[in-house]
Image (cartoon, rainbow, N blue to C red; front, side, top):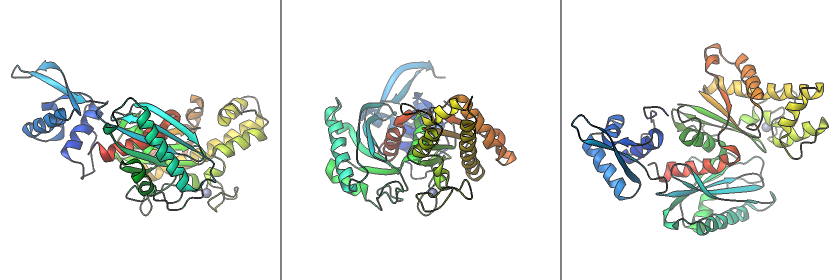
Amino acid sequence: MSNEAPARTDETRTQRGDVLALLRDAGPLPRIEIARRTGVSPTTITRTVNQLIDENVLVEGNPVSPSKLGRPATEVSINAESYYVVGVQIGIGSVQLGLVDVLGSTHDQHAFAYDIATPVHEVITTTAEAVSTLIEASQIDSRLVIGVGIAVPGPVDAAGRRILLPINLDWRDVPVADIMEPLIGLPVRVDHNVRSMALAEHRFGVAQDCESVAFVYLRTGLGAGLVVHGQPFSGGVHGAIELGHLQGVADGASCICGSTGCLETVLSERALREQATALGLDESDGNPLTAMWHAAETDKSAREAIDRIVAMLSHGLAAFVNLLNPELILLGGALAAVPDAFFERVTATTNRAVFPLLRPSVRIEPSSLGMDAGVLGGATSALERYFYV
Ligand SMILES: [Zn+2]
């Protein structure tokens, strides 16, 4: 962890939110150090901290080093289990949920599958029931659950309430929060799935020391999200970063979006499975990309398939670096489970296509969040809105 709190550019954050975010990022600190790092007077910080202790949000630890006046300085830290949120990932045909505390630990989990032909209202209603059941079945006082964050596969509106166009589902402009809130009696925040994963890595994962981090996630499609200067990044009109629909080859296959040669035509779970099957590989129990990677050691066709995959992915990542300069790129979903040598190769290939000034800074690593990335993403998005404010 860094010694200093990351720079905050969100001017709407309150002093209470600043104190909580500092303690989340830096760990336990004495009041005087909180005052120094936030630039707020010790008197004001003491009042805020004492109020948060009264609310059981902060707890006092043992006295540590004596101050200059000889009095012991007592550290305060966040009480991880003071409150909880429910993180939800709505995927293509599956929903995952987790009850997550304010420091990002998941306590109870649940998952269910749905047919993608199911009407969207029905999927959201079933999800709402699952949220309520998850809370009721847990050992936690339900009054401590302060909100729900839903990570969805596509652009959302600026207010974080509607999903606009999940290209791999037949849903259009769905008011997810408006449908769900009356059913569960909790505030609901909707966020782009991969942007919320980038935020989760920044707040609780391997990107805690990074000012900017990109997350690239391969499942049904290829999505990307970004945190810049510590804040989730949204593009202009619809907040979209559609990396999967960047053109990788001029005369490539038709894409679901209506274009051709998009990265997603090669870099999706289905496309990877088809490529592995065409090579005669049995990858039914595992990751088709890993199966192809190993087959490429001895098989020329598998080597050519891997060359094509690495070229497409690196093309997309180089564009990302040239346009947005993330300090760290994390690969998640089906891309997280491949051997280190894959990452070394993708990094080297990406580097060759990157503006010279940026080459030394390119870092491409696997996500630390595993297959629960979306649950923690949704939870992190909810914590930003309902706790770290
Ligand atoms: Zn496309």
